[in-house]
Amino acid sequence: MSALLSTCRSHAVVIAGGGPTGLMLAGELALAGVDVAIVERRASQDLTGSRAGGLHARSIEVLDQRGIADRFLSQGQTHPAVHFHIPLDISDLPTRHNYVLGLWQNHIERILAEWVGELAVTIYRGRDVTGFAQDDTGVDVALSDGQTLRAEYLVGCDGGRSLIRKIAGIEFAGWDPTTSWLIAEAKMVEEPKWGLHQDARGIHGIGKADDGSARIVLTEPQLRLDSEPTLRDVSEALVAIYGTDYGVCNPTWISRFTDMTRQAAAYRDRRVLLAGDAAHVHPPVGGQGLNTGVQDAVNLGWKLAQVVKLRSPESLLDTYHAERFPVGARVLRNTMAQVALRRTDDRSAALGDRVSELLGMDEPRRRLAAEMSGLGIHYDLGEGHALLGRRMPDLDLVTANGSVRVFTLLHDAVPILLNLGEPGGFDITPWADRVRLIDARCVDTWELPVLGAVTAPVAVLIRPDGYVAWAGDLTQPGLAGALTTWFGPPAAS
Image (cartoon, rainbow, N blue to C red; front, top):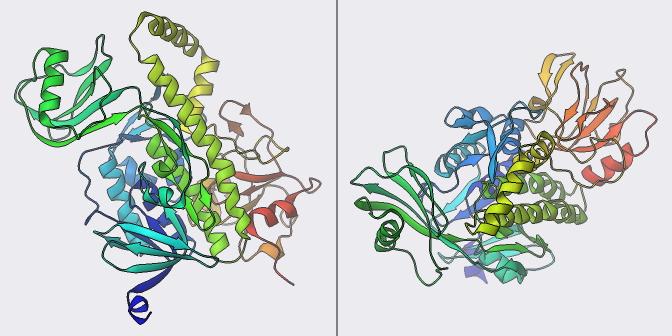
């Protein structure tokens, strides 16, 4: 026992996996004053290959809510469209960030890691979680170096093959793969055919990386799952598709992905939770995977902090699955549809033509673009104002301390009751230690994606993740109930 204790360290929360989801979750918890640690197998944040390629509008808003969006915007390239079979213009959606930010995952991770470093998060690098055991008070987490960590909660952000999910025995139901693609980054001696190329096999592409090498994506003629791909596989596939391999050489990264689509049946098993690819996997068409994971983290972080700090009961964590599972399920259906539309047979092509016609109309385009960008997410929080369960618009406000944006008020991830009526109309003294009351004036039009203009409420209760938990006026019931549901019972007087 003494030997075990000598190698055991304690944290309130341990996160398995230091990718974008794990880093974002660690930052959220650290902002709330929770002792959080990441276990990451890589010795540094360096990432082989560029992986995911961008941030959608809602993810950029989330980063803006924490005051760090400019760090990403300064290093990426903005584009006015999301992609669902065809490009969908989002420049007319009501957000300050009505674009996609082109930025490779290695840069996204580096910037997030710098932010997490500023928040003094502990990272155990160069080791894996090899097992865990949970009891009524916490989780013992075994590491590959023989060390044991004790945590109140363990969160698996360890990818589609999540060991955390497997040990927890959480079902990973869904659809088996039908198609595989080779993906590589390598040098090419000859100038390739840049851009997309379609043939009877499917859609292929060769793009240019920052260092001049080629990013290659090739549809394989038959599903391959049998081995790790090699440079020879890439060369042979290039010859079969383009008639030449363009002298491909010096690969930095070769991988294979499929259209396997699965989702965890539960995002929580007692003191173990899942986020990101550990909770849902799907083909990367549309670029939703990384973004969904980051937004999982922002939904979970403040809730887990509330529970760890004993302000809310553990049942608050059940709302994480209740809210994020439907979002993940919708993403899975979207990606399955896009893979189907990429098929090159005549019937699929006919379907694709009809879908393109529909998406050329403003209403279908706006609706699907809002969904793809994350701006249209609506958590089912019951009946009430149109804002309830939707993202709070980033309005310009005037307060006693001057002009301020809504998102600026969320930088420290503290919930806000925004009073836009007469000052002093609302008394939230029993929650004053955890909810900030701000009196302000607003002359902006309140506009939501898909819904359009909505009636401005007198007051809005905004959760740390930027979603509206209550909206109304002094005569509207439910404020005390919403405060209790999301931020714990009132403090004793």
